[in-house]
Length: 122
Image (cartoon, rainbow, N blue to C red; front, side, top):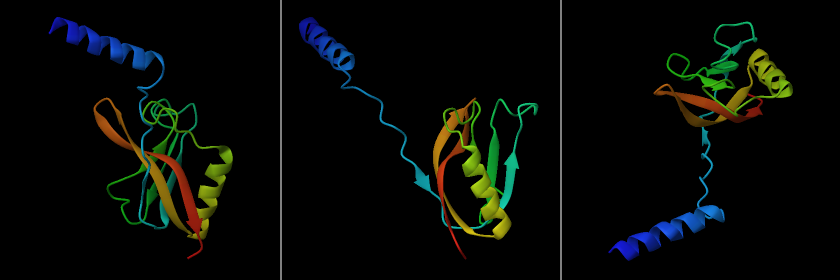
């Protein structure tokens, strides 16, 4: 029994060393298509900026859900300045938006982190 346990540990260690045991990237989910109800942008001087850098709310679920980017709550999920400008234009024009997001956890709370979006004319 001890030999088989040692063999299993060795196989796992070797597999990890050669990169066979890689964590799989989070799969992005997609929202239903809706208009943007609200857009929030935070600047570095804001007290919440370290937690997240911005958020959007969709018209269809604005009372219960937002989709964030950046900060500790959505580490590695930043939006470029261009993407933010495109989202603002979609908000202003009332365009239909479909969001791509991944679930994230920070301090035992769940967040939806924006990873991409599609915009279409109404």
